[in-house]
Image 1 (cartoon, one colour):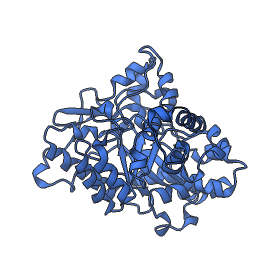
Image 2 (cartoon, rainbow, N blue to C red):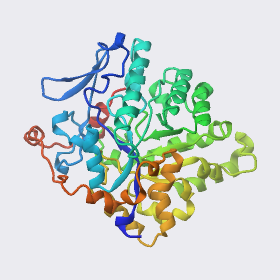
Image 3 (cartoon, rainbow, N blue to C red):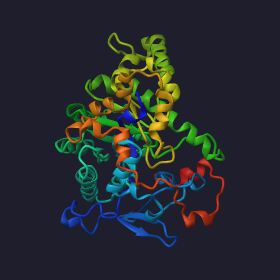
Image 4 (cartoon, helix red, strand yellow):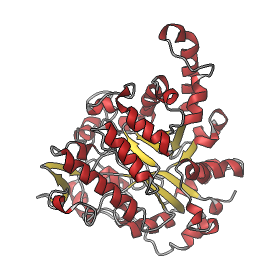
Length: 426
């Protein structure tokens, strides 16, 4: 297949929230209490909610930034690309990258809405979270039908409220929710607990994919306190294997037979060995650990139920015969530092050479559209959503580097994993 004929759907991108996101979505009695974007003395922006500050870390929005200006320092809207927080400009950046549709994770609320969960007034926290979801569905996704896959935040402090919100947004066409890869690290019961059962049941019933993104436990991989940040960046995607092991050995998949879970930004190259390992553990140890997959192997259950997601993974593609190709999806990760924007098609084409067209279609868009219940082609004909067709609409998009005067003057310093960990809220 020629690169210009690819249809690309990314199941993992990110947005930076605009300052007016709560306008028109919050009940009147809470309008003065919503999170507000402020400018601090150093010129950076921060969201403030009940006294909590949340900044946008620089690595979250480096699209268009010179690589030598990447870093973990806070930033401000005026220093980042408009496509990070303006939906019309995001669509133009997607067109320039040949990306037809995109699922976007949040920034300041954190991956699973921890920022709102820390509200002292839980009624206010719920109102703000629902307002956020309505903004995301109605404005961010609704502005360009067929281009944005909706994703909801859950009120993680109450599993029944989580279930209610899953059902509420499903009625609005949202069949994806973000949750934590390890909720115990956030101070909640683990994935092995039945605490979350109302939430899992709602997702099971509503055909809602639970997206577990790397870093959604508000932690990064720290091997030693003085390790360079390169260590964390190397290990972070593969660290999702810990979540995969929790899921497969918990009762979750057996208890909720229609539940689908996505390992967002976890890559796929590590999976063949993981499958081999869990089958060996089951065969050798199940008689005393009392695991029971009812005549099946754990690898079969994993391949059937877990959505796997990759950005750039040549080895994973070469090992695709060990995977379930109906559950493999692609990610762009715009505007994060691992993103392949604006050359995602070229990156993919480099290692999809020789792959059958039917497999390419599954990986690039068919699986994503099916799994996330997203009917893109009912809004826009397929021939208008190819890489070639989209890029033809974006010849005026500026793809040059945009340098930050403030960052350039500050100079560069070696960053350690501890530096990055300190920038993450609890």
